Length: 464
Length: 127
Image (cartoon, rainbow over all chains, first blue to last red; front, side, top):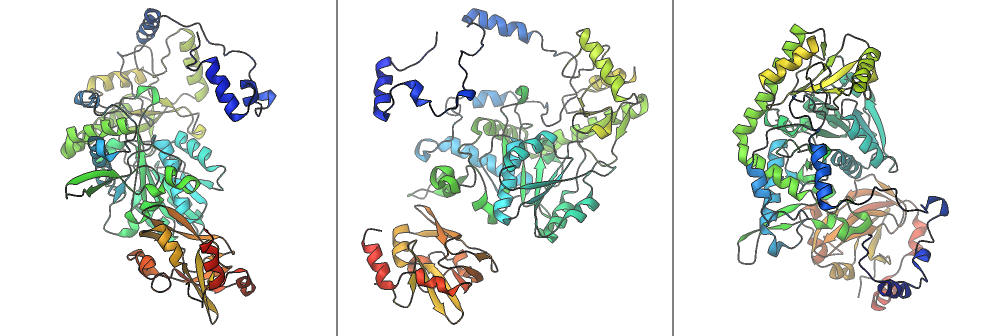
């Protein structure tokens, strides 16, 4: 049964109002070759009990036992249970942006606290109320730098998440933006010599990610200084927000020249489950002097008529509902519920807790790297300092690894997760798709939730 | 009555010609329509514009409006004081509320602009 809420009479009345004879005529503008002259090929509807059974069966296929060692933009961290309890309160669980300050002080205050946390963690002066996710956030940062500088050339590190770069390409391709990629040096960081040779007065901004896609920590402050010498902006992208607990913020330095202009990223690591890729939450922070070019909602703190503190959406003249096609972005909302999860997470763990969690990530990763080097034939690539990810290279050539994987797949043993269970020796994410020059390499991630036993078992799998 | 030593556009900018250069701002009528002005975005010196192009924007508590350059010009000076005192545009639109000084690139374009008399007639027609 198809559910169409208006009656035949309703439809006739609406069609008459706009001067169309039929619904068909309403769609006359769509060329014939683009039209699907049949119903969608969907399976038949299920009853409630059948539907529950359908999902129960699929849920039972989840591999929960072998530990996963995959990151690459989405990270498994411990999620305090208080987060679910708080975000399930009815005052909060409408995720839509609150327009009406009179009835939404709680939500607005939570967003204001999110902005404050992000500004503190990135060393910036102002952060917005959140964006859809990290990848669209990076695209927004690039469009923002184009507006500020009125220049079109962007130098983007190849060590920026490849899927983020793909999203950026989609946003940028019809806006006159030219993206030039900067390679990585043998130590796994952005090649600064190549950067220096490509920087010129036409450069709008330099984009670097730290920790980068290989897990190595970039010299973001050096990159900012180099960019500023050419009047270019410096954009730092952060996929793994837990690293903000231990790394010097890109926006912070004694010398103004060494501070990033925009810090953008993904806050999924702050208490938000992987959820098969989303919903997650992007953030964007910048200097106050650029605030009018910033995309997205912004909550400000002010005083009401009787001098009491209050929160309200502010600087809305940047936004689409007021400024139409001249708006800084077509984003008309934020990721309130996920931003709230991140806010509760940060409030629960506190600055000391976040620091400790970051340290656990670094130490456990270091342990895994040491064990792999000592006990397996795998090479650990890149010598620069790392956070919680690293690249290993299989001594076997790529073809053999793939043939082995395919053989496993035929036997029905392969796991998309790369779980290092019995007989499986392929944890992490294969990199040949994104960086073919690295050969038979994989990206591994170790977080605070991986126990020493799990790491040992994974290493044993690689050794066998 | 608008000052009769200035030239005007339909978009409510004024242009004062002096020697080789000119000064640009928005009219008293425009500032009244906009209400309290809270922010002005202005170009960098050295930027060149063709007649009618957007050279900046002015933001009031009500709306953001584009600023259109009356004639093709190069910006030679920007009123930096407006950064901290945008209210000057409300209080003294033809004086301290000036926005940019320009070098005219094609003086004949001034012939297309309105006189004070024409502008007052234009604004009294209900815009």
